[in-house]
Amino acid sequence: MKNTFNLLAALFLITLMISSCGDDDCTTMCPAGQILTADCTCEMEEVTSPTLVESNITANTTWTADNVYTLSGRITVTSGATLTIEPGTIIKGKSGAEENATALVIARGAKIIAEGTASAPIIFTSEADMIESGSIQSPNLDPSLNGLWGGLIILGNAPISGDAASVQIEGIPPSDQNGLYGGADAADNSGVLRYVSIRHGGTDIGEGNEINGLTLGGVGSGTVIDYVEVISNVDDGIEFFGGTVNCTNLLVYNQGDDAFDADQAYQGTVDNFVGIAGPESDHSLEFDGPEGASTGTYTFRNGSLKGWNDAGTGGGEYADMRDAVTCNIEDCYFFNYSEDSDFELNGDAESQNYTAGTINFVSLEFNTSHLTSGNLLVTDIFVDDSTLDAFAAKPADATNVTTPTVGADVSKFRNWTLTDAEGFLTGF
Image (cartoon, rainbow, N blue to C red):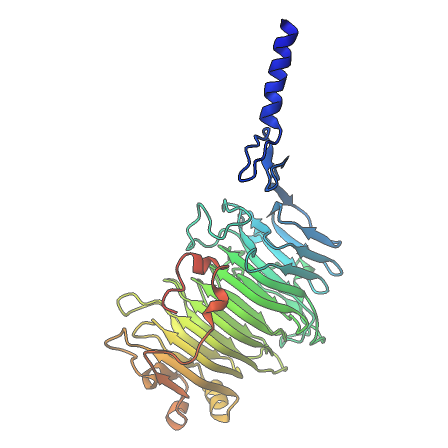
């Protein structure tokens, strides 16, 4: 009798654990730690495990989507090494300030191959973020939070204008020689960034010295940067320090300083970009000129820029041209700025460059229909702070509109960005 009872019990357990698939549905019951597949079989469940990154990357390395990678501090991919990041991978930075600020640095001569997809973007965020692979939105962090870690810094060997052929990038202590950027190779290749979201960064490493969401120092034209989102960074969203890299489909939301900043004779083109200001934002565009003997010009085209408007006052500026910059701004749409927001030539050198045609504003449109006073017309918005009054002699190629005919193709940012998931692209 006892043997019969044991046999019956064994048969009962077996029926719970083996497949009994019908034609229409599956009734398999899998043991703990296993999951049921589409063909009614049990497989071990894949569990995402955290991986702490504590030292520089000195050999070719791949980060996979079945892990969460936590940066313990400033981690550098050193010259000669390539870091490959699979689609859907999440990288988190620990909190820390000053010399303990957390960042991922791609040094000169190194590469990052971070090729996400629209269905599986690569996400850089804070250690405090409980997001899991496969998700776009955080289950616990407000999208406006900033300064929780550092950011992503890519450095290359392309030309810059500075006190020397190569200089130290801001945000990295001078004692760390991996922070040098600049050189003579305009076609330098630092890798690929595609479908990448960078969130909650910009921690302070010293007085007034924060890390940008994405810093590009001397990055060459061999580098691919396409479909990149920066969310809530304390300092600039994306800043170019010289270099020749061309970028497409860039989005910055709620930056603390400037959405897009370019200086040191950057010589590339940014095509299709969106900036959405927050309450602490300064300029949507801050464009600076060379800092040394070298010169260069750059172009931003097909942009849609949204200001911050609180009862018609405050909230930052349209753009600022500084330090003898030469640049082109083409086919851009600006809306929702405050009544005192302006678009400035900062001094005599910029005024002269505008008059000479080395600063060009082409087909710019401004929607001020939400305002009742202040800078309502483009003749009010464009300000020459020099003694030359360049706009009186040469009015800007700009118009007031209520419906734009220029601007970004915002569809490029749908379905994969946190900005879209949170509804912040409404009105574009």
